[in-house]
Length: 113
Image (cartoon, rainbow, N blue to C red; front, side):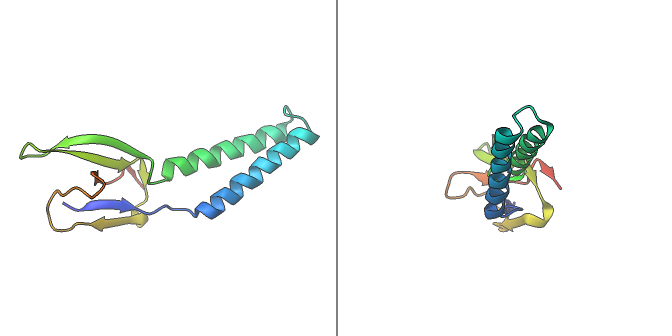
């Protein structure tokens, strides 16, 4: 059975740039308009949404469990929370249920988009 790896669907460079711009905007708005101004709330909300979205679709954010095979062996399994079908990469098409060097087996994401 093949293992499924996912690539990150966004560039970390651009994520850091966007988070930096939103952070500086929020701090600037808090200094000039005050933290209770609607623009300050919009900036911090946008920052929160971008950060949470990036964490959720990151393939390193995984659900970890153990799976018992038909022969009685137990293997550790990692599954990303959200994965994009266009970012999937199948490896180990030999038909075995091998475990990678890091001790984990990688399967399809819990939610595939």
